[in-house]
Length: 223
Image 1 (tube, rainbow, N blue to C red):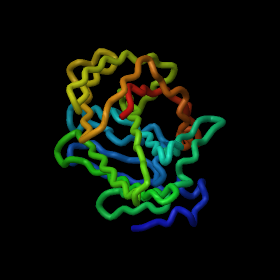
Image 2: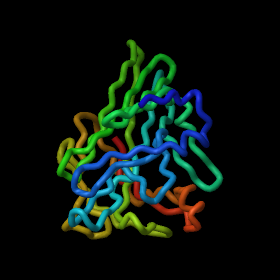
Image 3: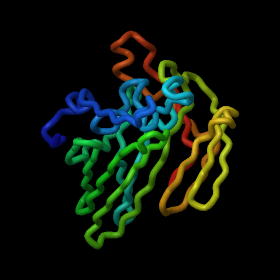
Image 4: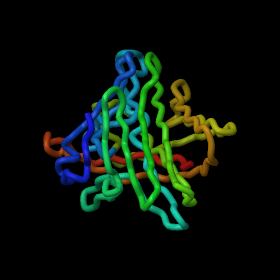
């Protein structure tokens, strides 16, 4: 399945969703522009005692690319009175086995592929950048949570502990040391954040279902 996103309105794009699974009861899911519209969306929703206790761990990753010293945001998020417009750079969404997002900014092409490691609570995100000789820098910002996928972290103050070992990061959320989060990057440098919270992410589909639609998430670092 291929979708030319340039032919769709924002409303049409956020109504189209995708999902992949890991065989344990976990999954990765969102809309075709990467904007989460449900509390059940997340790049890593992991069963802590498979197949039960599904927890939203990695909500999403916000990407920005710097071209000739100008930054362009590729991500799309919704708040009550604001929508970030990274979807305008999305040219195509494709899914046969895994979701593939194709962005273009000026003459730089960015392809993002998402897959899950079968039988493991692991999500892999691969970026392929074709810059045609143009100087470009990609920045990735993981947005995490640590909650049952039926609940919401509203007005929540996260307690984040982090330990970096070269390209690997260990993150403990709210003193859950028995089930830490591990992030690994093949290259790049980590910049650690403290007390950085994404406030009031808005889930349109939850409001439609009659539920409170906003929650807080943690932004522990960027790469």
